[in-house]
Amino acid sequence: MIEIRKEKKSKTNKVNEPYYLLKYYYMIGDADGNTSEKVEVSLNNPFVERYVTLLNSLKPTKGHWGVMLEEDRICDAFKENQITEDDYRFLCRMMFEELYEEIEEFEVSPENEDYANEFYDGVRSDTEYSFLVFEGVELFYVDEFGKKHKTTIK
Image (cartoon, rainbow, N blue to C red; front, side, top):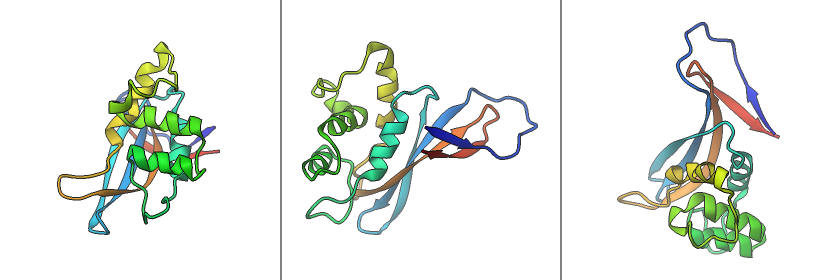
């Protein structure tokens, strides 16, 4: 369950429809700096809670000092029993647009197809000049006034 930790009510006019903001945190190379990616996710996305929980549970696999969001590293996490086979297929389907056709084992109903595609844009493993080490993802709730609120997944 996702709990929204709202602060004081805003007295400004309604700006937009509420949504979740998913923020991915990355370290550039081996500590050359930090960067992040932001993705807007629908409030009624049925996959967001599982996705955030699984991503934040990933640990470096044997022979690596950091987590990279690449298919072979997610597969290694499965092989090391960090995640289940279903979790592996779920993450691949949600994270890697190029694997969309190959991950047939994780069925997404036609009405949820757009929701499954909302996560792609934040997933990175490199920049134009270096690799990116995944450091976690944070979920925010953006209200109708454009104010960002922290969330907690319980």
